[in-house]
Image (cartoon, rainbow, N blue to C red):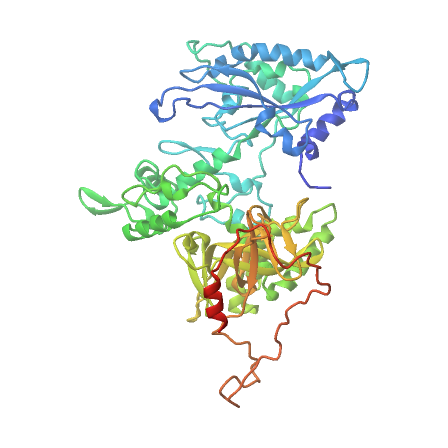
Length: 623
């Protein structure tokens, strides 16, 4: 499918390599590889000073579900500690480089589908690593004034009091973007174009300057020339095809996300040692002449006040936030148990992982596409996408980008839309609330976790939906209850409550659904539609499940019922006890009748032990 990246072969880097090396691409048996490395501590928390570096080679000539399977990874090197190899990394890479150079030329191999031997070739398409490993593996500067990998020339670095900052990101914005004219960011406007990249000749010149840098940490440091972005020439440049690669390094976004998340939370909660809102940062603001309300304020001859920033939390807010985090429960395998990250004093978060904030956008998109008032704007956005031309997966684009497009579009016409629609466009608060129970139209709902300690069952859910173009009933169980808080104004409280459900798999080779004409049964062992778990409370109908004594195992019989304390009465009808003494719902459901009865061989069973009764007792009973 066009513009759908389901395998590395769909990417531009793969196609670019094939276009240059047509002889390599002509034989589908030639192997494309990825090289991944990172340092880790094998002793965990027992030792903080040990660093071991494995080097993996990953083959991509496999289906998507297999090329990233751990069983197909090849551990080619294991560089021991106790410290990072640094410039010595190339020394450890020599055995692997010899094999890669040999594979680039071709190695006689046997094909099971052909009696003839052929020259098997292999090429490294890219490396995968975190940001610091970019310097360890490839020699690219990751610290100092040339640390930005997107600024080959005219870097955006600036020296502050005790660190070097990169504050020229507005150079990548469109030329007439309003943020370019704003002085609130760093006290100046931005009119420069984005930095230019090195040409092949300039890149070769950069590498030639450090060609003679030899390994060893005791070597005398060389003084870098202005604009020099490389500290050494990596041995990977010895591969004949390396200079032709379009994407030589892939930065592991997981590490970057975690570091940013830690810094943000550390700043919001003012965690000592992790917050970026320090005295030095306040002095930097003063030096730059921006955000005067955050400058240090002198209160006496020997003291100054550091005003609390609006984004920091009070003691009570920290406790409330940590209690919220401690109460969050996600489905198994979706995210880490972030409640373990809450420290004993309930004022710190530590050890956060990467997957805990990615569900927010999915919830926002589900609310928008479930709101009829938003449908005209979705159609308008689709029209704009069609006018752009090209092969765009509209559904995927809308799921990822419509909320931002909708916010921008409604923001331009704020005075012409109703307050509810404007609040919807502004997105809900990031601080969502989770509940384990709720009432919807007087119907009680409990989550599965809450049900475990109760003798009643209130977590069964059924909802009508579309599957492969057909309308079917989706059966599941309630995992969590989520409330999104939108902007409130004019005394109007705006919030949306969502159900997060696990849907039982009704399809597959072994169908998880059975209907014998009397009862409907579902297999509760497997789930589907894991990427679409949300449901508005108005779309849910409560059911309960009982064990299926026929199919047994994980099979459960679905019981759809009418609540005894609820009536389905139209507004123009008179309910019970108003017009008359008797009331009956005319739309009563009928019990299905089996058309053909089965023929019983015998009305008695001979496989059970006989029960004997005395004749006296029998006679007495007859009288």
